[in-house]
Length: 188
Image 1 (cartoon, helix red, strand yellow):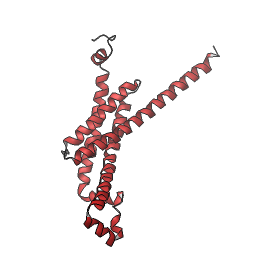
Image 2 (spheres, rainbow, N blue to C red):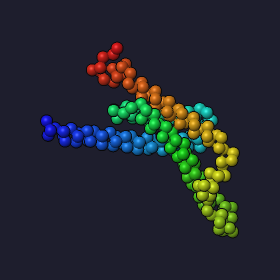
Image 3 (tube, rainbow, N blue to C red):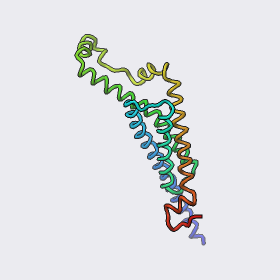
Image 4 (tube, rainbow, N blue to C red):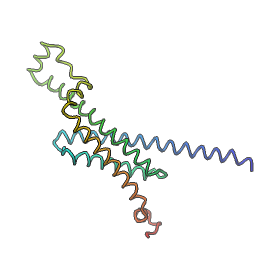
């Protein structure tokens, strides 16, 4: 009986390590999904698909549903953990959008400098003109006019991501949902 205690302790340690590694992998998946969704969102917003209220709700909802679905696929995870992951992903997505807008600004700045003779002439006359704004100056220039919209956008995105993950996780654990996924589980 005493020889069994170290084996049980080792088993418990392995289960804990597996659970932690599963949560780390889940967090990495959530962050990568958030960055990918942010890139797509910036492309869509640049193309003109940026309704002020509806767009962040749709983006957050898609992100949250993805996180909720991924959480159900990992198995032994809780609804609270899925919600936390979705909220984290929504915040990362909102922040990553600003980073992608800045990268697009820099890409446009460099393209204009290469293709516009007037910009090339101005760059040779004033070498400081060649450098685009830093990220902090880019954000500071836009912030006075845009911060209320940015705040509403981020809160809507984070909130809808959390709500969608909560619902996706809850719906995946309903008996009828399990029955449709696993034919061995009888419907109520």
